[in-house]
Image (cartoon, rainbow, N blue to C red; front, side):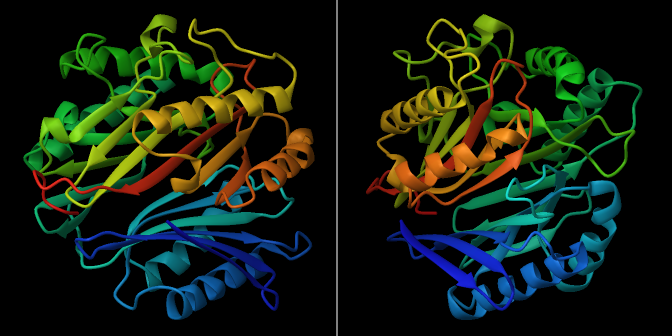
Length: 384
């Protein structure tokens, strides 16, 4: 993994860029952009981020890099989403996620974009982005939502709709979906409905404690429409075989999620002929009995959280140095300064954003998800 950190001082934007090129030739990029001047109005912050992104594309990335997924983190989605969408509709073409999770450096917007070279992307009628390269077809979905009466019904409809979308492409939820994100308005109140609906739908898809689940993050996140309680983003791959997928457990540090009533994998690794993708779900300060460790101490929780992540990565043959993108979620905005210093001092090369998003269990003060890539030589499988 190669890392670049660059500051565009005239735009008050900092770029974190991670890239990986495998023997198969495909280069992957993770680009994370943050505004550094909180005094700028939102329109200026948005314009500056977009201009910095254009410069990153021109100066730092391969000219044929294609954006396949983008997420905006906003401080006020209701008042800001339309402006973001107006730019996106005119300038870009990728799966798009817009969520209210305020950047905790006091600014109004941050952006994460995932790009690949040597791919052909096409927007499908069902809303998914289809990305083809070699033997594989990737499907990215962003911003799926509905306005059913409560979080349980919304989740049920979201999952059933997504299952139908996958079926149209010859895929199955259990076989092809690698990663999901559930953004939940008022997570302390509405997460129970998400858990119930997900569990019940998963049973119908042969996703149980005896088979497997899907790597996932369930976290506070607000849609621009207050009637939307749950927003779903997802990623699936067609062309992979069961032996290419590894589910990560880290039993010395973590317990199976079903033991405390939820249904997701701690992490999932996908091996291609030239690289391995490692998706780590939202991970917090928890032990292998499902208990929250260090209640009330955000630094101790951060230390245990990163220990858990490192243990999951190690199970896949990776390490923290292989992470290309991480999102850190904080429940309490007052913890930002100390957590920002924690990461700058202990993980200075880790590409990450810190945003405001209460975790699904109130006792957890901090959670992090990440995506890592490592080189492999696996001739049984086609390269990415």
